[in-house]
Image (cartoon, rainbow, N blue to C red; front, side, top):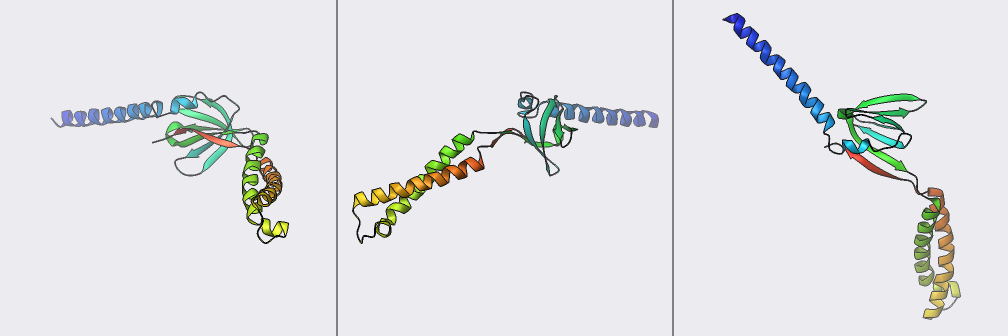
Length: 167
């Protein structure tokens, strides 16, 4: 009777271990959005945030249902299991021209308001007319647009898009 109980306990323990392993495989393959990682083209710049803390930046190499491979640093390939990945983001470079245009618009708007508000000082009049304020605001606005375009072009238009986030 004790042999049967020992055998039953061993069988139950083995069944629990197999069930845990099966759930780990199912969880890794059915992570929400994990399939989206497979659509990333090799060679794209990625940022991987790990659950244990820290992040890796590198180039996407390959993907499987249970892991992802990233080239980080000098040709060092890191294989990360799906269960240890918190988030994966793609780094996309945008156009500098677009960023310069946005910067110019913001710079013009700010400088237009400042120029119109300080039109009395700029035109050396106590109570400038609406036309004088618009003229001063427009002139200062053009300078602000140039400064904004320069800052926008230098800052660039890079953005990141999160393609996977664990629950």
